[in-house]
Length: 325
Image (cartoon, rainbow, N blue to C red; front, side, top):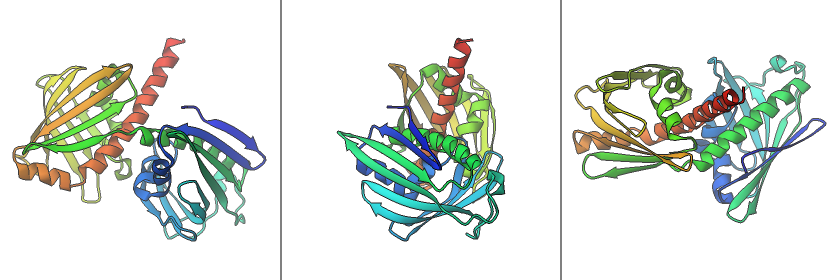
């Protein structure tokens, strides 16, 4: 079930979706910081700050970076939690020091001191899970409309996280193998992987800020992708050796460590309208390969590919719109 079921009452929003995963997995996605960071908030935003103490009286502290770079912060207090079936959290908006702030930007009176309550229930339906989120305590009608949009897109992103089947496997002495399925035809996946206008929207964890990219994905061409990080600018570049919707081969060099480029081969296989990607990187030594694994590359790749899910969904929607004109 991909569509949300929505019911609205006075100062209340109820949204339901059935996810293709058992309750225990979905509950983890809803209550562990490393997972909530993948899907919380509307499409295009990120959370460089995500702290969760998932017990009664524990706090959520969320720092959201919007598309324009502006930061917004929320504190939530856990009122109830019963794994793996129910969690209730009461939120309000704060500044970076966790001090409550007014919400005039959402049409909320400055004197408002209430809480926005998220009540989440999970019901098993065989191997699937029905998730129902009930939001109450709307501080204004304008905020309610914003919440309806944001919650729908959060549910979409939660669906991507549930469907995420990425696997990272060290193989042989010098290789890393990544496999991942994307819910889009091969032609779209190839375009998203190789066109700068798309790469800028999915490459690198969004919480690190905007991506700069140049690319000429044809044999003999070159690419360069760069993004800030807590450790400073991160730049990868290299020569493209082959490029087609079926197979891409390129050198990948971390510019801070010249002379250690890997040869990366990406194969894209279409399966009933979906695309199965195999990415194999061969490093110059076992030490190079192990250093990449130790750097946290799996976390960065997983977030990047979840962002790619969003980009592909947008590309598919644009194709549908253009086909009916």
